[in-house]
Amino acid sequence: IVIRKAEYVASAVKYEQYPTGGLPEIAMAGRSNVGKSSLINRFLGRRNLARTGNTPGKTQTLNFYRVNDAWFLVDLPGYGYAKVAKTVNAQWGSMMENYFKKRETLRAVIQIVDIRHAPSREDVEMHQWLRMRQVPTMVVATKADKISRGQWLKHLTIIAKALEIDDASLILPFSAQTGAGVEELNESLSEMGLV
Ligand code: GDP
Image (tube, rainbow, N blue to C red; front, side):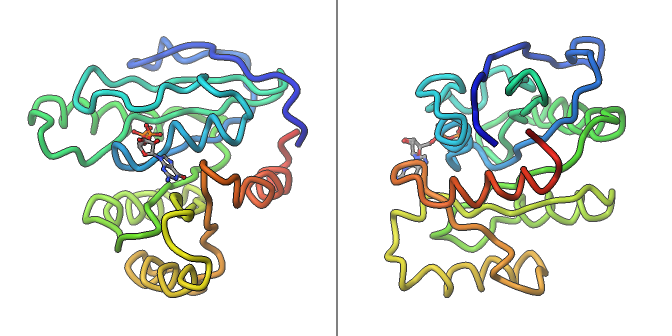
């Protein structure tokens, strides 16, 4: 995929607000502050398309970006921020449930975790939830620049085990800082038929 064009299209809470047009779609999920916005910006080669350093707990939306006029990338609201009120958490749950239930153009989810840490309970729950719904999911372990390359496999193995992924090499190490993993992610999306 050569990113020729990447543009913000819409923010949505309800299904009626999702962009129409039937383009295939990839969704990005992860804990608040995991580095999801940074990954999106790095992958799309746009410095400030997705907003980084968002205040966790503020109004959460699904943010849609259109790439090469050919597919949508969706930034799903971050999960697992402890200070978020219960009501916000309930809204988050129904927003996500609706999205996965109704978005027929969804091709795959990229679940983003922090390479330094064992997956949180929310990471594990999210992963199981996607598996239960048979949503094709790829796990990307970001902030890989924060540990040495020699330590990557050890960390990926811990993540794989917690998420019950048979082969740690299926998890892609990534760094928004250095660009490690950008090409591999690009290739994976290519293989899904995105252009
Ligand atoms: P989001 O809430 O998941 O969208 O997370 P952000 O993209 O806003 O990133 C949260 C913080 O982590 C910011 O301070 C980023 O600069 C930092 N960050 C994100 N990705 C990386 C990375 O790959 N390497 C390093 N060193 N820092 C990162």
